[in-house]
Length: 447
Image 1: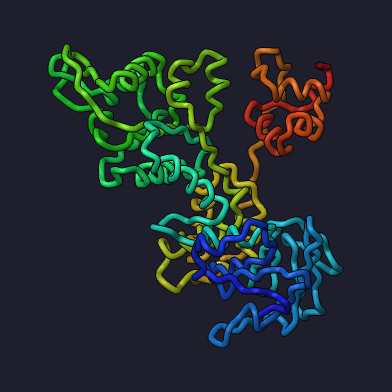
Image 2: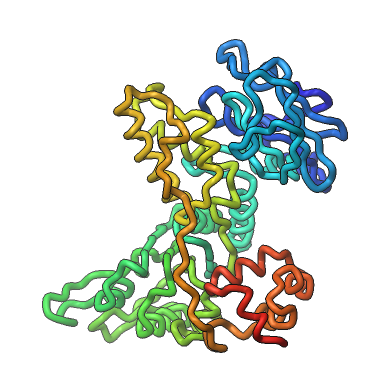
């Protein structure tokens, strides 16, 4: 055990009688011996030291790790990482730490074949764990969000939920959580991606049809009827055609469905979980989404964090892909490969990461199943997509809300705007990213 540390392992589960109210900084080992893992060590006002004893075992010794290799100390806002004269060095975000280095929480530190993650609150890991849960990779960041979704659903008072988040961040898994936490977890769960429905088929797919309603029409239920008694998940709900939005609103208000060609409505009992990567309030302001439907399905809204805000999950996603697509035991990843993945932005989130790992695995398999190395990661994989040149913005190009007012008042200063609103600066940055706005535009628009 590291000097002065208290260990928290993967076996640690939420115990409401022992959960502490104050955050507990510490170090989480997320990768060792070629596999994702979860071992937590609590910092207790003295440096934590790690070496071969703490990071390997007799069955899987790591010759790259020295007996005393690295130490971590917390100063209340960040971590001081110090290599203890190891033979093979310590790497912070892929860069050799040749002298004591100050790093923020969440920065991966590579020690031989192990990856360590300094964190502000180890208790969040104790509460939510880290690893595969019913096939889904869940860490403390995602676990906290899923818990809030489950609590919202379990009250039995909500007939709708809006999940916002980037493409590939796992919105359908979040919708499944909403469904399974309801009073009817065994009822139907029907998922429909609104962005993939041809416009002329959207109404028929959702509401069904009667024989003779149009050429070749048959009696067929829609997805709403298929979800009767359970949950209908409408992914990318902002892409629904306006005429279908109107009919969906009526169904939500009357709890009745009228099929195409029918004269008598059918009663339905269904909960709606909608998801979108767009800002629905902005879509309403632009006239692209019905205001009355937004007020019906837009609250409560829960934001699903992107993968870059959940880096602790990355080793587990890599391992899960390798176990699925490679013969058991024949293919694994090096710590350097996992570290390289953790250093990318991944605009496509989990979907993009897993697709890239599968591609890299195919390359490694050709090379006699050697471990994946950092060079196996494509140069463009996980990189932020380049934005097109900014066009001059008009007042109608972004919502004229309190965020815009604060940025105007602070002449585009993000920190100043956040302070004025009493929110974290990342919230201001997300607003700018969502609307494709450069903060500099507000320098020419004084409040």
